[in-house]
Image (cartoon, rainbow, N blue to C red; front, side):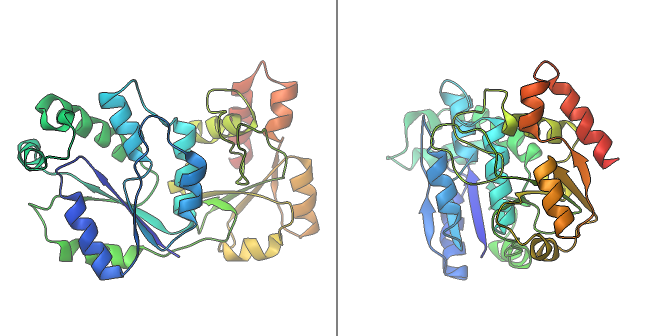
Length: 297
């Protein structure tokens, strides 16, 4: 499987590029528009529909929410989980941007667009928010300016990069150097879903998923640093290890995962399970960041 996420401000040439990508790859296009309350569960299900081209996805609710509404509509924890899924399934990002005056001219030609994207101040804020996300992006990302380069150049780049897929039920890099392995225990938010250490509705709470997320990010163990995360329950860990390219470092999150890795004859370093840490060391969340750092040194 593989896929492409195309995002950018209205008037940036995004729609024209998507038509070109559709005609070239012959993949379906899904327009993902979810203002105010994005349905994260639906977004994760859509990722499983690859190969597919997404016309907007997880960046738009953050950018338009921050620029034009009451604030970002997805938390960094949500973006972390979605980026992990997208990367493992072989997706890349294409961010479309051209000069602001051109985008304003293009938007004035489109009667169906809302009034906000016809104002220079609004478009400037939107571009600023997109650039912040582009800098923090976890996926392979190409910036595309239709006035500065041809679509053929972009197609050549995309063709060489899409489709590097990891094993099912793994978050993050498809060929990691560091693989964190947990177990089936996890906190349950609203509409919990079966991906490692993520549940809907808990991004603002200190629970096992957010504790692990904070510890990894603070140690610069992000997906694009060739990091992967999975559970061990019901998995042939030797097979997953092989499919991941035999990562140099395996880290067990908790005793259950450590025992399963030992049974699979996979040497692993050890860190307490984040759920255990939250229960017995909830007064010291930074201590878990230190525990992760010491394990990977």
